[in-house]
Length: 540
Image (tube, rainbow, N blue to C red; front, side):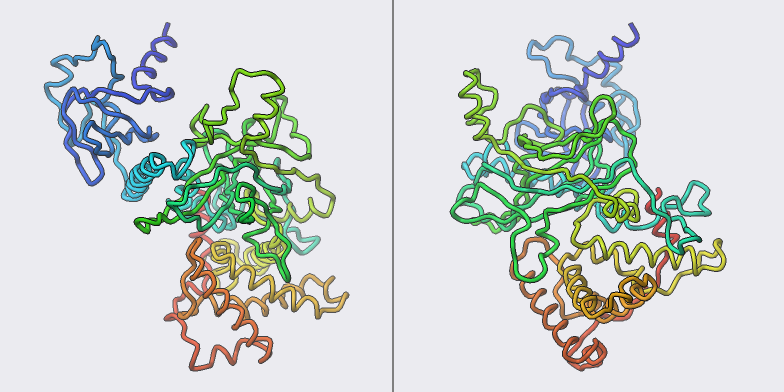
């Protein structure tokens, strides 16, 4: 009986259901920007149910904002049981109480900024859908919004070492004195996947200009994102815009942003863990110049079966779902329903018309396993720069575990690579510059030198300081902005010219001393690494 009462209490507010219409139990006056003021008895349409108890709702006038869920009750068309009692409405103080007498949870400014962005994008999406510019199954990108909320879903966050519960050692960075390097750490999930292509992806209308087509992927358990969010940009042909491909053949080094080979690592014990793929487009609206990002559909590949056995390494055809990963039963293109009640033959034809993503889980050889085991316990990234991550981890181990005489010393450490390398993960063109510079230098090394780990680390340090480190502090290099063709082109031309000058002048010193080179004012964070601050943030 108690369980039934609990279920009734939950269903009353519809937290876990698809109920969207609610009636207000009392008057509420907006406390801060973004709140929605309402009177008792108003009918509200709930757009998004936030876990902190503040829901995004719209009133009959079309006004949107946050409302406390404890002021709401499920709307009953018959009007039965919806009138609140005198006790419920008599002494409502909206400054610190809800209609049910519970404390109103506080929100941060960053939370409201994310909600305000969601309101804007939902309104824009409604307009674009009405105009027929985008299919009905498109939604504002869930993973793009998470990336904008903070660093906790970015790769640089997961590159930092994590402190053990005692705060006296590192949980995921252990020294191996016999081999003179960090200890490999096998994880529950350690795999490589290849993005092949996306098929039958609906093409947006002419009223928007598509700036980027891409796939964002991360580890997901159905409720929470459990890793960083990694992005791979897709290529397409004008003759066949509904097919997206990855890892195109290019001259020279393939840009890491286009690399469809990805590694995935995690020690999460969740039985429901899998890989979430969200197809997205970055667009600009022709009539207003407004930019945004839409999800073109999503797919989920569960990594373990019901018995806890890993799924086999093979190619998977994943049908795309519309809506967000938290919505069920939404189709990308409702006009081609996969649920039609037709014969088997027609169902096969219909399935071929469904948007789908083709991915391959690859089996690992011994060398691949050894490489992945040297990486952080949780990380998703591109295979093309994995050797650079290994250098970073080895240098991190040397500085924090081998060269630090007193393990209880928490002073700042002078090391430009440790203080700046994580920032490269947010600027793929600089990561490509480091890859190019290292590949060129490595080609000049002797075979015996390539087998000397200490020598390679010293050479890598020189290459880093003469290539990307000066560029990170350049005042002439435009800030990196996602999917801005002009900015991306300007940055790459400047990066290529800088690397060319370094080759011709045998180093970056002459370029740095040139009067034409402008750099930002010196900041100690350019060269000082505060491992304690970074580790504590990562473990919190």
